[in-house]
Length: 155
Length: 263
Image (tube, each protein chain N blue to C red):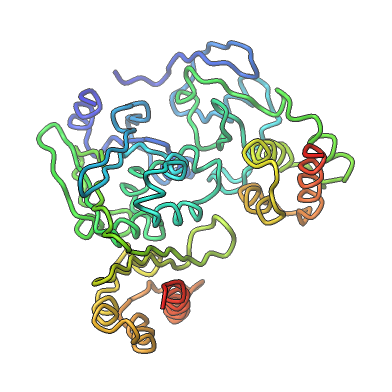
């Protein structure tokens, strides 16, 4: 009943994957080191920074706060699987990043917000992205980008 | 469940229960704990139900924060929980974190423990030996310490339905949205009673008993209540937020909460 390794089967960005993993391995480390999806970043490892944000069965989660074995049977999407094209493009157009470390998480969280709320206020956007606050951009351009995409989609 | 309880009975303190893992995983990541065995109860669907009795609502321990936020029943009968959940970390954490996990972890700054105190809730603790109910007021014993025995799992939360025309208010102050609260307050006002629970100001969530008694007897004694709530708490000696500062925050929170009640 107790084991140091466990065999898991899951899909990552639509591709079926089966591996034996150490039971103690974090999901984000599995994605980065075993599968090479290094777009999910490891920042604080305590769930605060949001750089490791991934999508698990359709919902954003912290990749550092999920064990790989807990993803058995789940559908995982990382930034490499793609994110809404208009959002990605608007981050580029408005230069909504500086160092880019937080950007994959920002994009996945912003995409989730716009699915749930097509008409968010700037406060709503800041609130939803508060779990991805990092350091360098000041967020003004990020909020601009999300707001601009929301408006464009409604027009 | 039988498997989980059997493993827990055999391994006791060497094992840790993991549900959503949103409190346990940071502790493991920092190597602050190194349990021999993790028992993942996250897929026990029996613990994911909300059931309604005549005079209570029972919430399965594995309901996630986002599930509670999306529940019309919780929104209608336990709006305090709805208000509080908006303050719990961030959406991605609320997608994994569970109410039972938060309560069993017993972080003194956690929102839901104070809510359960204010709502006079009770928790179902299950082991291979027995099932027992423990009142929220008896459950929290200290920082990360609870009435849970090493072979017990918290399986459900039972909360009396608030009486008609009662009003719930949740307020907290954190440095940034989603950060751990420096102080928080959960208030439930009914026509003939008032309950106030505080978080972040002691080694566990606490009732402001003297202030409750004062305001229940005389709802307009706001100034006296301000004095009382600051003196009846014993905040921890924290250099970042000294006791005097937390006493001040609690006064701010109480004033905000009372201002949200109909006059």
